[in-house]
Image (cartoon, rainbow, N blue to C red; front, side, top):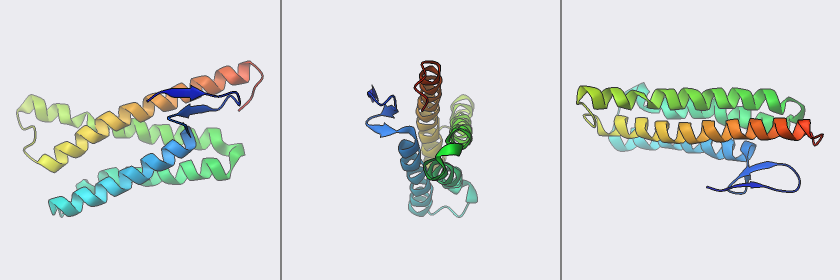
Length: 142
């Protein structure tokens, strides 16, 4: 996805501000956990881990839009959850090493999803923070 930097100095990914992208990511995670749990017939709470991690991303992203003066704090919380998602997805590597990859298809699929999307999301958040710092240094406070 191409990152657009418009004249208003707002960092965007695929035309979305990081706050909006974070809201969509939170919704995606919530839906993923619920849908995968239903499809797999899993009775385990662990199948809802993406949903559980998506809720704070959704809430804090919304709060960053609602309370602009606290946006920096809320978005730092959001990126922490993105990092946790990425780190949780790394557990798939353990499955590969032990030779149990896809022993539980839906669990490993969720781990791969968390690994890839968590990495992408965290990377974009970091790029957004770097962009915001550069804009502040230039006197174009975001």
